[in-house]
Length: 287
Ligand code: FAD
Image 1 (cartoon, rainbow, N blue to C red):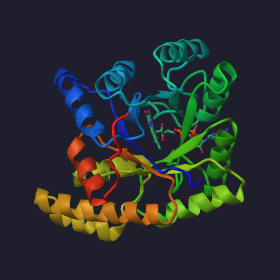
Image 2: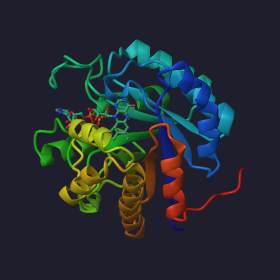
Image 3: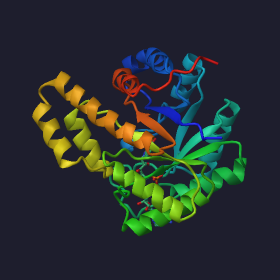
Image 4: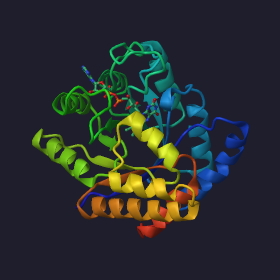
């Protein structure tokens, strides 16, 4: 039987009381197209780590759809991670995105961010403690992690992390489909069988995208950068152009075998839902 293609949505814990107030409506809107799951970030961009558990509970309450917390090594101890895993398990969570995490400002790339140094150690720990209870997703970087030393070493580190017991990988966003297919080829050549879900970033704001991309090592191709620069004072035109670019990219990925798309919603429903509509993705009936 052909593998089912999965579509999932990523949220972050709101940073303001207004954001928390709007969260139920946001979740309900996004849930209308029945994604396979929602994930919620944890301390992303080196931000504080509050709110992931609470946001996960809100997603479950307002959508009934599976919710996956991100869990990171940053500031962790074995005891704190064990306690958090237990809390999630008792709340019915069955899926976790296991990461090292963005390093807080001031921490050098070679310093351990917590008792666990790399995501591979976190994956090993979760599997040791909980066997197969949690489905584990890990991060992948088709264009190499920004702190990667060489593409080969970075891929070896990814392989080690996958072999520690991950079920699937979700990529950093990218705009070069070839980088994704090259990464999938390297997985196949290395005998890795886990699905590599493509991370998709809707384009809505040039300055923000340029900032994120500089930090996470995602290349904005010159032709896209130039068009976005030119359109940055014409929001509707920028949104239309961004939608075309990301629709085309997503279509290419799906047509050539990507097993799923994970949308970085940035807590906005419209860009992701427009993309969903443009791609004519299915809207399954509620369970
Ligand atoms: P790792 O796989 O541990 O890799 C980190 C770096 O260490 C890489 O350069 C790798 O090559 C190197 N490395 C790995 N193992 C070894 C080893 N044994 N020896 C030497 N070097 C090694 N960040 C957050 O803070 N919160 C989030 O919620 C969050 N969500 C994300 C979701 C997705 C889908 C993605 C793609 C990223 C997310 N991030 C998040 C960002 C991520 O945490 C950062 O990119 C972080 O710098 C790396 O995390 P990782 O899990 O990929 O780390």
